[in-house]
Image: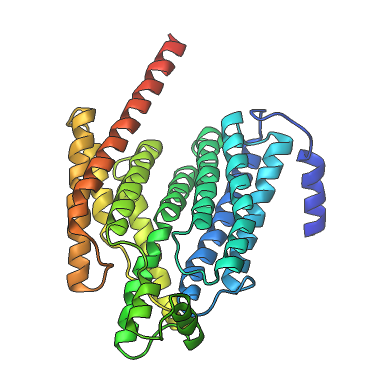
Length: 371
């Protein structure tokens, strides 16, 4: 049977109006959510290449990484439309998350294009338009995670792997802005070696934006425009919160370590691929493995939940800052402001305690509903 015939058969069988939460054949649920993984994988590959691209060349809306990212976005938007029209494979909450996330992402795209038309170079991952892209992706991923947990066939060999993969994508999205500093520190090193990664036109454009000649100062301003406290505070708090949620959603021992390890492995895998293609390299946050271990250790059940949150936050902070220092000494890592560790610990502990309180409240409501 040809592709056209298969599509027509699928349309005739499933393309009918329905409400979210309707009964869905297990094979259809599995197929839909595997397509989610394909779309998200394309978005991941495109965005990973995109960061390296912008540390070498001036921005180009039709650059290959943008096209790969767009292909993944088209799949995700198509799936959201299918869920919306047919009601298959989602409950009402999962569908609303997918719709809101996709909507925010699509609204952010033209805003980002206008921002670059007005302000020029895509000089940092920390712009407001980029924050909207990250937010939209996070919301749609939350919907996909909820849908996967609720509807993916029990006992399927993909169930556990796919859920872990979705949390991997969530972690990558949360960590993504920190890649600016990870690329930036090696961009400066390339300048100091006398062989900068960035093309002369990019160096000149970056220097012109701050009114300087092309020199080391303009290179530093282009490569590391963010205060040194941002990298560890945002990175460790965001990563730890995602890993706490992943550990509880997946429900297996050392799930957080596996998700963090998957992200580190991915970054180590694309490092030589980008290098062989003559693109800039980045520092890889290997210390995230320690964060995953700390989160999993805090869930061993030997401490009351509030104490586990505080001890876990202290372990994440200590191992995280210590891991960054070790990478600075042994290889490369972005510069950080070490006194910011106090803020990282306080914010993480507060958020972790809130997560515990919300989880406890849901558990009480669930018990009351079944009583």
